Amino acid sequence: MEINSESVFRSLQVNGIDIFFQQAGNGPPLVFVDGGASDSRTWTPQLNALSDEFTIIAWGEPGAGRSSDVPDHFELNDYADCLAGFITQLEIMAKTDLNHVLPGIAVPMN
Image 1: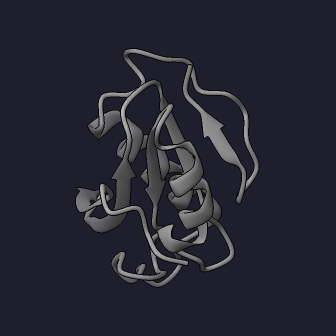
Image 2 (image 1 turned 60 degrees about the vertical axis):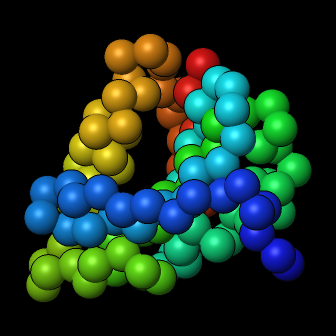
């Protein structure tokens, strides 16, 4: 599937790891969190379908896709810390509430 032409590919450094992500649209932020060694491209259909109503942010999990490899002994809590740092750097938390999610589920940020 082709990616929305208005999509922007960016990266942020969080806890020493470069996190690659896609961003598209304009509106309330909606963060998609991939899991299982996938990357932001997992969310291309949702990005294309929802970017007319939301600001879609599709993060690339550390160690997958274009994001940096993770160091030895990188654990689940390290992924959670990276995600929290990622959201903080995007300044989303100050504007919204974060709902409880499981890996691979969209994170509504309203």
